[in-house]
Image (cartoon, rainbow, N blue to C red; front, side):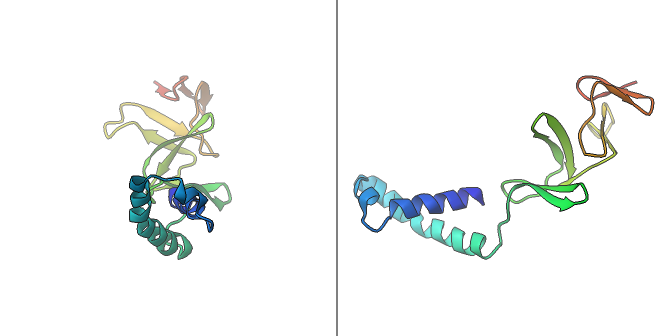
Length: 137
């Protein structure tokens, strides 16, 4: 969504009313702009203004619950770094107070606290986690 909005703003600036920017382009550049004008405008009006595409990144659902939407609009299951912390999202929903296995065999285990932050360098309820956030058996 952000890239579509940025492209639309760039196009609008390029095509300003006095033609100042447009006239500074080479004929090849002008053809490229004209070829993409329909795509940019269509994406902007159909997806952004009609609400088909939503924001990407973190979405506050309230009560400490968060969703994560990737730039392509998908709701992934993966670790997401945000600031100095790591969070795990499953189908786009941030997990809280949860154990996460590194793989199907449970080779390594991690834990995210009530804020969804992966714990590290600490002991919680008798379980010790190293500096990488891995449970030390």
